[in-house]
Image (tube, rainbow, N blue to C red; front, side):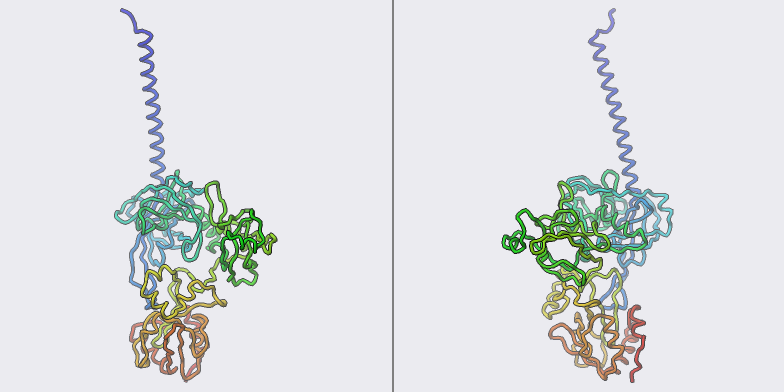
Length: 521
């Protein structure tokens, strides 16, 4: 009997080799899968669900708050024992809890820092043991590439458990975010819903951003605040206070494509940049002027659309560089002025100089005087007005400063609009007046003295010794409202008592009203 042939031995060896290769591949796959599962599990364990009980302001009754509203969102445990979520998730919340992954426990938290403009907030749990039980995510130190895949972890409505969705990065831009603040934004095509806000967006085990919003008019278009903005926020908070980002304020710009305009500027064909068309900045040291062409921020070249190249496949608005290159409240720019290039250090500011500006998530200042309730005008965006068509039409028809001066810079330091957002209280002293007409009115004068702001209004009423008090409103067709001073002050106590109102003024105006108050006969 003969043994196996050389051919048979070769076949057998090949079979054994193939099995060994398959075994190796299987082991590698199992190792990779285990590593991926371990990484995915670590990311999941960093996710928290955020619960908040909100009491939003009520402009029609500023001495009280709207009914409590229960909301939920998502959050992330970060390296360094920090919990981050969106600012809008916890705005006006008096109770906040976080629930860790796969836990039934809800841990009470406090807001320690928030940046509404970039929609970020840091939470501090009352029980720090959460950080020893659950891992923190590491922030990526890079922007994701266009077309790269991202996984979003969060707690959207429709279920109680953690949801993980996948999307593709479709766009990265620098522009207006929230409350007249600019920043980076990443657009993705992942399926996002209410409750996803504050959830982590992860790539290769690192957090590349945090969900902030979705486009409600389209399917599967969401937006992330990138890790770069989060890092800037965290560094700002590291000294125990959040200051905010520097920005170039009080200027309007335009492109320089027109040939006649370029001749007027005295610039060569190869010179690129963005031109200052108008300056409203109130800083006396502000040194940009109309017709200045900004060609560089630092050493970075600005193109004719006002953009800078960040990397090979990414251009961003030049505003991106300003907070990142600012030094001591200034930024170095190269400008062409009257045909000559020069380097200048341009003053920046953190606070907005707009008349109608965001002042943080705080309840409005108010003052009740007789049947009138005065209140500072809150931050309003045009898109909010457009969504309330009847209110917009009314304000436009009456020439309200809310519409006329929506985008104005303050005319003087401390300027603000003071309005009456509710009808007059019912009282005998309102006889003959259209008590509803004052609603949405802006107070322009008290006894012929222009009203500068809420503080000034209270001072004018406190110090008034005249027999009468006369209110004028900036809205067209508004009545002059005249009251006997003694009668309106007596009516104030009656109105407060009849309507169950505890305080005539917001807390910050109490001392002002009482200070040196003249006893009037």
